[in-house]
Length: 127
Image (cartoon, rainbow, N blue to C red; front, side, top):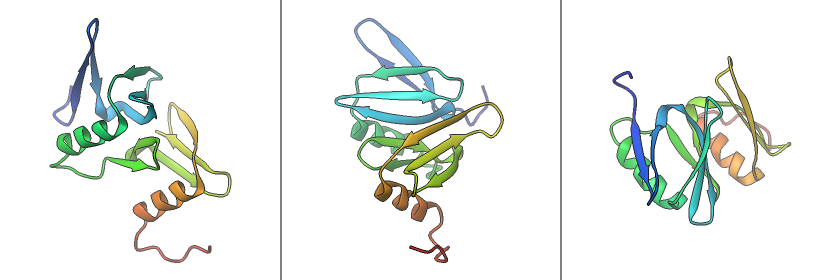
């Protein structure tokens, strides 16, 4: 592993799960659980709310903020994997532009907020 790898461990009564945060495409809320999807296609469910996970990520990345962003009520996405934001189709396309592409359906408002977060100085888009 490289020095930039950020690892988090999730444990339950019967399991221990090691997650390399740099490989996570997105996290998705499911009640008190959170599903995560990694770049190699692995998915898992962990018993932690999305809000608690958001706090954990802010602690892990306090020295390098801006890797993950909360998008709406249901998602936290890895900003490094955003390929396209299409507010008209209500789609967020995540890709490393080599090995995978993942499309996530989201509300227009959530996508507009994400678009604004990523391009705060670019005010030339038409509404």
